[in-house]
Amino acid sequence: MHAEAYNYEPEPVYEPEEGDLITEDHARFYQDGKLVVEVRPRAHDRVLWAALDAHMKKTNFYPNVWFVSDHGNAQLMSRPQRTRTFRR
Image 1 (cartoon, helix red, strand yellow):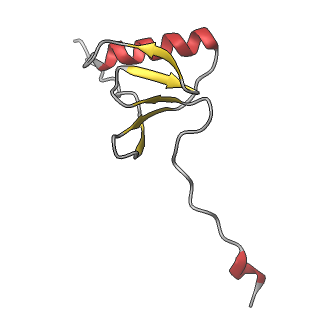
Image 2 (spheres, rainbow, N blue to C red; image 1 turned 135 degrees about the vertical axis):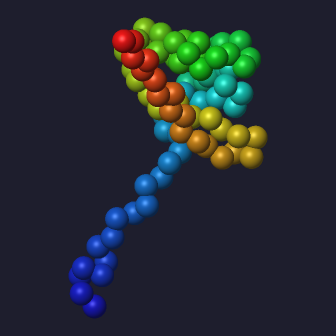
């Protein structure tokens, strides 16, 4: 066999890493097992991300943010895209 047959790129692993922020309810966010950010349940996305941004700025560390379902599936959270309104 050719050596190229053994050269492959492993599939990327999408799961939380050490230092990432993790939530199970979109209200309490943990980092390395410690509660670091808390917002009211069902808070608007702007409130949630403002609290996360404040924590990241305070610690000068900008980790990924993950939602982990009750089944244990991790999903990388992304901040909502801003929509611009143009004035005439």
